[in-house]
Image (cartoon, rainbow over the protein chains, first blue to last red):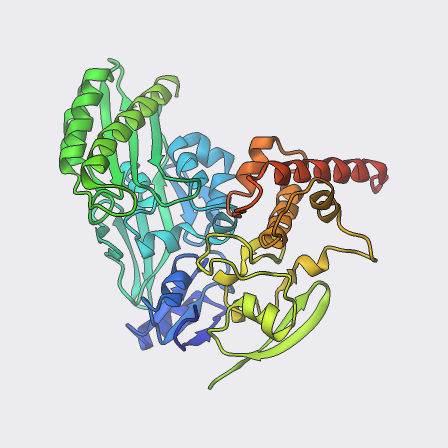
Amino acid sequence: MIPASFDYVRPGSLDEVLALLRDREGEAKILSGGYSLLPLMKLRLAQPALVVDLQAVTGLDGIARTDDWWRIGGRATHRAILEHGALTADHASIHDAAGGIGDPQVRNWGTIGGSCAHADPSSDWPAVLQALGASFVLRSAAGERVVPARGFFVDAFQTGIEPTEVMTEVRVPVAVPRMGSSYVKLERRAGDFATVGAAAALTLGADGRIAAAGLALTAVGDAPFVAAAAEAQLTGSAPDEAAFAAAADAAAAAARPVADGHGPADYKLAMAREITLRALRLAATRAMTA
Amino acid sequence: MATTHVQVTVNGKLREADVEARLLLVHLLRDQFGLTGTHTGCDTSNCGACTVHVNGRSAKSCTMLAVQADGASITTIEGMEQGGKLHPLQQAFWDQHGLQCGFCTPGMIMESAWLLGENPDPTEGEIREGIAGNLCRCTGYVNIVKAVQQAAAELRAAAEATPAATA
């Protein structure tokens, strides 16, 4: 399969990239790792006139911690994230997710910013980043803005990013004491896209109850979504099976799975409940030892 | 038809070509450079038959543009044999019957070589994880895993036999 014709540029600076995106608005697509964009171009589902390769732009792939945030460069690869011990020790859900994305070759090249901007509804980062309360730094020639991950993923392959913007950074709040997170993914075979995924982040209060809850689901909606009703039910509850079962019911009630090669809708609904349950149990276990 | 001039170091040798931006790296290697050891399998980033190393990182060359590789250093299966001697992985796939039809083998070997560079002493589980992006439809993977284990042991023994450089 051969992509349609396009022009290719490899600018040496972010400013050049942003100027191109401004001047060729709507015609240009950004190439980061390529493992999402090129398959679409080969199928001719994407036919950009201009491909802007970010590989020569330096400074976009770092992972650093500040007092409040983990700052993950948009071009940090899944592998670099997976192997960042301090980050994944802080947020186990990030380790869970990174290790299950594609296969080693995909993780070697695919990037977190590329994945989030591409926004495949079955991709893993969106649920994890929504559950953790992450934000995205979006840069254009006109300036920079920071938007919450919650609300960013509006539909399949549709996000709040403008065609003139580059996702330069993902900001994840550093973990607080007694916080645990998890990402559980059901896949048909190793490295496949999720049939269902659930990301949970639970913080326990001094009284042992859930002080804060984040819960988001992959692949059972138009976009990976926050299970807000389930979060509300969890907050203030004891971290026990009854609370998790009720939250899993609420999360499944918000799911809108579509039958496809991964299975019929009623199966996916049942799995959404089960996978949510497992994610909550795991996050709670981790929170108790954090 | 606009073309771009690319320079790529393939198996240590500088090669050049004029390519369309849409040319995939696997086609540059196979059709323009004649290096047909790298196979086009699924052409959808799944099977790994087209795996090569680009600047030391394993990549599926059906999911990379030739222009992306401009300036890069690439290793293909043809670059594994040195001085008429098979690479320990190649020999191990032979010894352990790690192939039947052989179609996946170049990609399997390249991915295994990358894996052993990262992790010289992998467990069986780590080997299986390491080649999760490479599909074999003949062997059931058992002998492929054995081959990687054999090569890992040989490469470790060779590394130990080589005196470490002194500062």
